[in-house]
Structure formats: C-alpha cells, structure tokens
Image 1 (cartoon, one colour):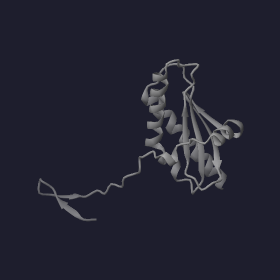
Image 2: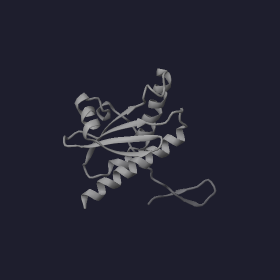
Image 3: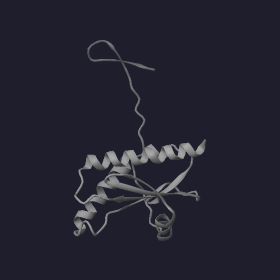
Image 4: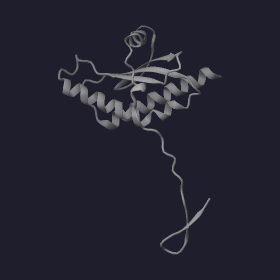
Length: 144
C-alpha cells in the first residue's frame, strides 16, 4: 500500500474507499400489477414493527424489485402517506446492499407500513435493516 507524507512530517496510510451504488433506478421499482397481485396471494412475510415486508423469489432475470405502501385507512392525507413512502424508499435505497450478496437470487418485495402514527426516520431505518437481514438469512439457509 502506498505511503503518503502527512502535514506533520510522519508517514500516513492512504485508505481506499470503494463506493457502493446507492441509486434506486426504475428497473428496481416494482410496478407490475401481476407481480403485486401474486405477492399478496402467494407471498411470505416478515414483520418488524412498524414495517412488514411481503416477498416472493423471482424466477426471471430481473433485479430485486421493491414497492412501498401506506394504508389510506390510517393516514387520510396524501401528503402524510407520500412522506412515509419517501422515507421508506430512502431507507431501502441506503441499505439494499444487505440483500445484494445473495448469489443471484432476486425478489419482489413490498414494504407495508403498519404504524398508526407518523414514524421517526431512525425507527424506519432500524426496521428496514432488520427485515433485509432476515430476508438475506432466509436465502442463505435455503442455499445449504
């Protein structure tokens, strides 16, 4: 590893940072009516309050796709529902790499918000990370 001179006259290690892809392109957004219908009919679920994830393995060569939903029953105003969905998308976008190392197995995911109150971002982030780790562990168990 190359050495660099520090401002104080000593040697300093140069650290290399590898950047993850934190984008959430259209190809990763679940929009197919048929797939969403199959998710509700045949999908398996994991819950970590205030989120529930419904998932199905995808047989196609598609990437893992995700959708987000907030019930109108609990939040009457569209502004509130859209804010929660935006926060859920952001937590997924930042932590989806927890799921990416599953040896080519791709999923259709639907994140459903279960809470009755508007969430704190940190609570959504913790729940999203726990659900993605559970899903990754489940896929690793079935590989063996």
